[in-house]
Length: 123
Image (cartoon, rainbow, N blue to C red; front, top):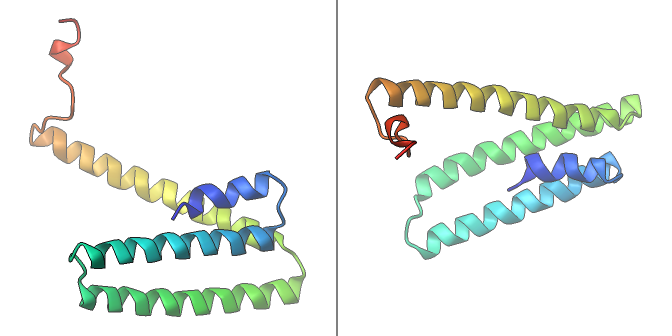
């Protein structure tokens, strides 16, 4: 969806946090919807998984939006949105590093070809 890229970019361009969050949410929604349509058109849709994840995404969205709206009204600080984006970016960084490292180690251990051979660099 590009939410990790577009959210901070819009904030850096000077857009207000509320507007940036809403715009990012719309882009993610459109991207996810188009991906779903593509899976259906190609006959690769798995309805049971789609319903399972749709249910959890809707619940998480409602809970998250309700909590953020409450916090914004109570504290009158839009920095909560910026901090939320920063926390998501930090969590993504940690998780992607951990998953990438374990996959790399697993590939090295089983001797998988990873796109180049150090022995053939100078040939």
